[in-house]
Length: 451
Image 1 (cartoon, rainbow, N blue to C red):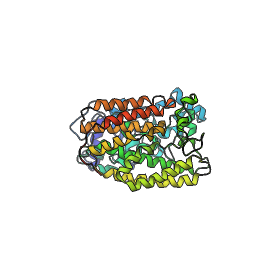
Image 2: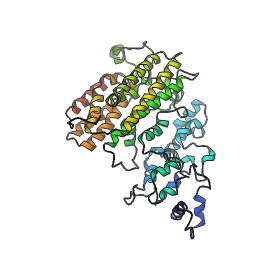
Image 3: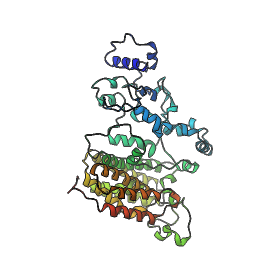
Image 4: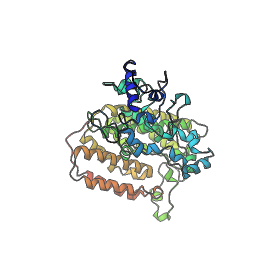
């Protein structure tokens, strides 16, 4: 039947000819007339001749096993089902929202939660975070995009989301993994048991099974993706902060560094936090979670020093105001909004510039040498680890250094410092970063580097 459906879809794209001989059941699988912009559900991509092949194919520009990878290996496919596990049910009970698998607060990120009038007959929320969450409603382009020489941008015009554009790809991921006005994790949700939101596109992409081909016309593509996503996630996080700071419920404590309060207690003589002191804030106040900036600033300084200077001023102002956030909402919102615009401007530059071995090594060294990151807290350390992992993975793939296992092991050891966030120890993480920095110092690079 799926073979017949594909023939029909192609025939419709070519003007509705050559329909003789198709089995009637196929018509039930098609979107209704005028359904352009509707969501069909993951099943519309599952045919073995489309994206449901068991093995990757080489006869087309895609592997044709994308659906198979998603359904069998990608955690996004389980996003809806986890809403029924004991921990999720307990979260729903604490928050008094009923069953999470029926609560819009949860469904908006754990499923394809679209209005009923946008759902085709084949749609099912139980698919979790599926194809159309990222690629957009398929009804408009499902048939035409299977025809020979069909241009990608034509599908975009008919409703496909352009994930080839790294700014748009990063922004799409950020809707759930960073948050927005519609989709967010707040302090109440964290207290009830929901994980805090952390994100780094390169690291998260590597952790999920890849179902697309690496662009061959973009050297050092992974560094480009990391760079653009760093700018985008900072921009989106600052927009989220600006929105929250204007709410009557401000302050929102999920904007703070959670581990600054929620950490294992030690004897005073063993406390690195008390040894460090509380520069710039009163003891006992929670600092702002600046993790999305402390690593990114090295990248921003390398590509646009003036923009980074202005952005740094905004971040410094936000950090100061967030040490006493009550009554400072308007000022915080203004600085966050301005900083978001600057980060977005830098993202545009990063999306079009060139990348090479020297630039990548420069970033790796700058991050590893930054002694202040460890003292910024566990979330900043986590962002540094993920960034070093992503960047060095790209570096060794493209540059093929001789002693990469040593650097890999040193970076991997940083993760051991993050296994138990409440037990995070800044001096130990700093020592690990120094080991990475020393090993990176032995890496060679070509003269110069892209600017």
